[in-house]
Length: 293
Image (tube, rainbow, N blue to C red; front, side):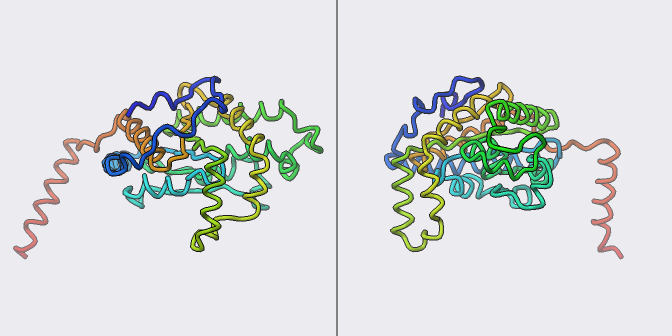
């Protein structure tokens, strides 16, 4: 699959002109599921090599409107990865402890170790997304010189964008491969998924009144997503904007991008030094000789 069309590495993203739907997966669902399964196998193999060498880590950042498919994305494209080398973190309303630190403090605590694949289901980008739609949230951060809503202006968020660019550059230099995905859905598709949650008893728990309240800010969210993506899309750490009205097609795209990015890493199992080979041969001989005693 050609995925360049979904990649943004500079400030040229126009959310209103970017499709949320490209292809109906139902026409090729069997083929798509087969390809995703193959991708999962490749991802698992790559993670095993990553874990053996402990040099690289992969950080997958998932962002999107409510009901964009973030949870099911994790479930369907990372289900085959060894659980010992995989972890997921979600970032919601900060706790009292977290508010006593800088906004990236809680992020650092959840970074995947070397050799692991980690997913941020929502991430540090919430601090330039929901906080920009509802700037009163920032008043709880106890920041110097931020005492009223008038202090939270465009300059404030430009500084945060710079923080994020610098942070991601720092992580990249330290062996993190960052893959940022915005699961892009239409307002009509979100409504359809909300209605499905209401009409399906076993899915009722997924919907809250706050989800409907936030829907009233749809246009504002679209604007802040466009600004955040344009401000933080770089050559080394681009954004991938995934058409997500069709869940299976979006899963295929994300799994393809992840697989191809892992293929570019210089991954291999460690080679044995002459001394290590001697130790290995000695261990082998000791095991073979066990029955003699």
